[in-house]
Image 1: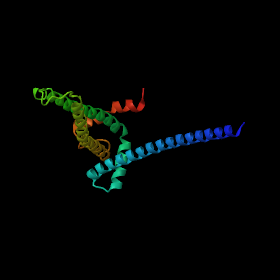
Image 2: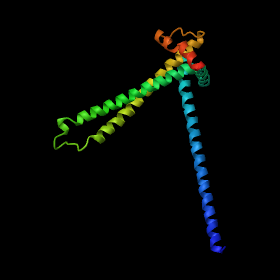
Image 3: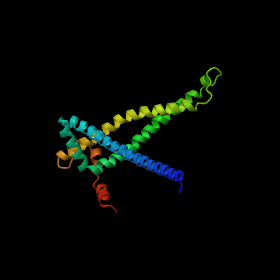
Image 4: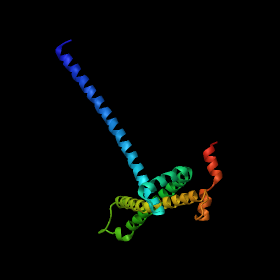
Length: 192
């Protein structure tokens, strides 16, 4: 084996090792990013629920956070079921608002005013897509407030149930009927 072949083999080996090192560092970076996203989501969730419990109970942040976490863990099936249904309905609401704003933009661009030679639009696609995106952003911001109020109502219901030995005393009858469906809870916990 000549000296030049050995140098080539060594440089290929070094290149291969550096590629492996960059592959490992990319995997590590990806894992760290996902771990940080999980931590960030947990902190946001704890903060939101703690602030709700501060408003309900008037206790300090740490105490309210402990109460909120305990309420959520004790009523995980009720809260989980309601959150899934609520998320679907909120998404459909966002979609409805954004699509209606896009439809309104298209209808507005389709009028005679925007069809004449001076104000003619060559294609309404870009303005309609921009209106759809802006409508979705506005709907997301608005429905974030609605989602916070849903979370507040659910945590208030759980707190009321906890204080009165499992029966919510101050909740409206429809909410009690919806969240205290024992047959559904038994079916979910026992399985098929």
